[in-house]
Amino acid sequence: MIMSKYQLAIDNSQVPEGYKQTKVGLISEDWEVRAVGEICDFIVPGRNKPKNFKGDIPWITTPDIEDGRSVSESKLGLFVSRDEAKNVGSKVVPAGAVIMSCVGELGIVAFVERSIVINQQLHAFIPTEIIDPFFLLNALQSQKDYMLSIATLTAVPYLNKDNCNSIPIPIPPLPEQRAIAQTLSDVDGLIAALDQAIAKKRNIKTATMQELLTGKKRLPGFGGEWETKRLGDIANFYKGVGLSKAELMPEGTNRCIHYGELFTIYGEKISQVISGTSSKRRFVYSQENDVLMPTSDVTPNGLATASCITKSDVILGSDILVIRTSKNIIDGEFLAYSVKKNRNQIMQLVSGTTVFHLYGRDMANFVFNVPEVKEQGAIASILSDMDAEIAALEKRRAKTQAMKQGMMQELLTGKTRLIVPNNP
Image (tube, rainbow, N blue to C red; front, side, top):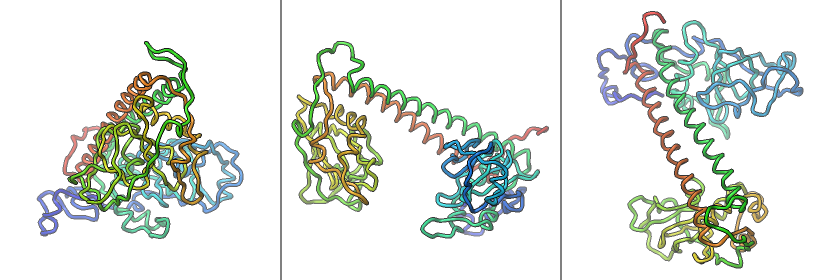
């Protein structure tokens, strides 16, 4: 539910002048709040999956939509005919509608650009003349907390038809709705541009890795033949010692790395360690140039993750495989990037069924090609610079997304009013 900076005043039953308390929190007194089912027609999809994917109408499921964006096609290229849609009990959702996920991750919304058919995990709202569809899109996004509060919480949370239609929506005058929607759309455009820039940088990095880590492209000043190395012939393997999440604290006296952070925080280079601990017991400590890999995960793909740490004396928690080589032979960053590039080979070394594991004895059989160590370092430096550029763009995106959330807080409650054109 929309939270307000005036929440303290609300708790004291003191509503600021010009505002009123509603189901969505404080809003401008000249606005109203209506359940979305009162201001939109809706389409409930059929419960059956099509048997025949031949037609010209896109078959849309939750993975096909991105929150706050437009949707016009199935990512899998699935289409159905009107007859097949009728057979499974689904109606065609017209262009201009807003669809929303109602099973699993709730409240993912998208604007419908062309006629589509949706599966039973989506709900479609067809705006009437009193609600702008793009304003509706943003208003629904702001109500995710409300959706969670009314959802049926089974193994997979879901909203039924009545739940979906009960979501409260603030309604300013239509011209102001359009002005708000346009303002937030401009920010969405900036976020989309950053997404495109990030994707482009990642693609360039992937192509660069392919060229540099195979020797197809040599850097100026380097020559000579590359050698094929078996990791077990040039490395020693260690394993970290127990370190629970409860023991992590930013102000801890000793820097430390929990194995889960290798998935969520760190890339191929760890130059700054964010966590600390004050626990006192025997630990395993890093040495500069060590390469760290997680040793267990619920998916084998997650284990093809490697990070070179540039600092010594950092505590390494359990489920971390420590690969230690001589800096005169192997540059740790180069090895970490080589692991990522050779993901398919790592998959062949993983063992397990429900939980997957990767041990030192497995990584000993990892085979990769290497030039002399100075060229390894030069290659790693180029890739690291690319990672820094991507990280900077991701930081900008996160700030822009936070800015949009703040704008929604202001605009969707009427705390900040826009100048509305005289002729909407």
